[in-house]
Length: 304
Image (cartoon, rainbow, N blue to C red; front, side, top):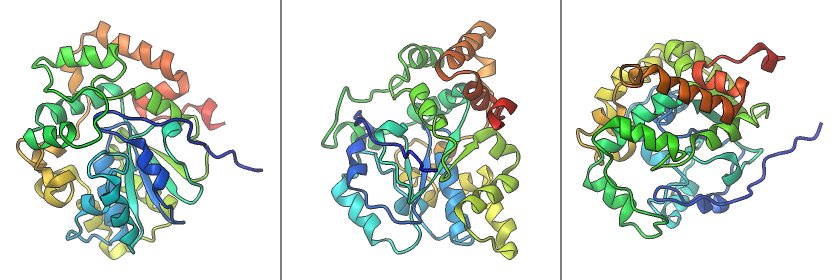
């Protein structure tokens, strides 16, 4: 049966993103594309893929070789030639919805989902701890579209309200992103991974990821590879794990990695606010996708 591959239908621009970079990206047959909404385990998955590809090597600067392709900084004139020069198997990241991405049958894609409430709490930590380097990179680099990014409010409840009411403000829509990837979940070159399941069953999920990517596992190095993908290890060795070595955040790499924990919103959101989010997720995503995003579980009706 002939596969109807996704087609790019629009561009996406904001203070972070320039989706046109993908128009000039030259795919290779074994490329790996890691996709998330943001703060859903992107850096974690980059570390996992890097460790499995390079046999537990900790000297690789993962972020320098695995860029965020649609990020405005650095410009594509620098980013794309650097990727062309790579001779190892390439793995890069994106935060785009499918409609704004060039989707290639050649590549393999991993999409990571995470409950939106956990995403927001991680986003707030990320935003609140950004320093002058982060703001300058976003707001003073050429090609800014839309308003510059300013500091977040002191009250996370205000941040939460804006994000939910204004469809992802000051970033972009969670619903659009998740919905677009869920819609193509049956494609043979796409693997869906859930943050919670990965956290609870990391060795098993890593083996599933390796099988999907056709990466052979060196069993003599496996325990070391798994250790290097734990949050504790990444937090202590983040200079080669996180973007810019953590230089754009107060507290550096340890701040960027933060806790990797879920459910922090339970101490802040009321039951009514949490129920409002769940109702919104159901309306935006439908019951199957909303259930997966909240739990990592696929309903039997979907499996069938």
